[in-house]
Image (cartoon, rainbow, N blue to C red):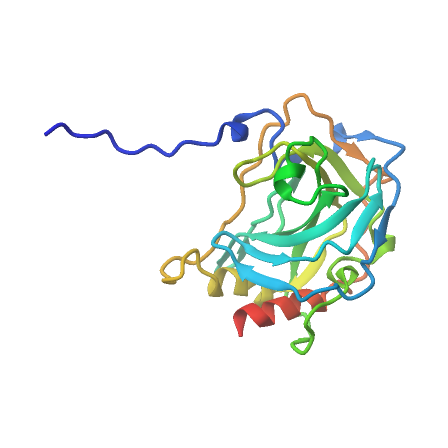
Length: 269
């Protein structure tokens, strides 16, 4: 009988286009853009209107949100509703952590990266939003490991204000902006990306939990590690900066975020 050729995995055509994410941000090539002012955060300081649904969806940890929190300003031409957040991470190695952030700054990557995904007001589904080049706005935060820092668990909380997930607002004025895509198929080029300079800090043991206690499948045969997409060519795109003209020193080490610890306690209990 005639042998059939091996099945080939096809890459979605959108993933081959020229405005893909993530990217490496080369700081001496970014351009200052005056309208990249501070963001406005609506509903970020109150508990979400519904319970958070925390799930391992087979390629990341995803938390679904109600859409009641919004962002504006920050050079965005519209307001956007927060619909979910998720994480990317690397692998625990004996000496430390193999970096798992998707974006990099001058070639440097961090242990993890948090993405808060927002959908433009007026759209009721992500399918509608990805047809618009600015249909989605993603806030990206690097997560840095701090060895043996103290953390608090908040298992008794069902939902939390989104602002407790991220650095203080006064530390969110320094960021990079570019037009890109989702980092998973179908890789729709519909994302206004914001990458903040100020990292979130987690303990080494909490970061290790991601690669040690999560699996890609229900049979728990393969640990979920290195769930990031490699950097993509910048092509002719320009990366803009806000008012950060020089590398700023990090804020005091107070960004060990209880919200993240709470999420981990639910996943890893």
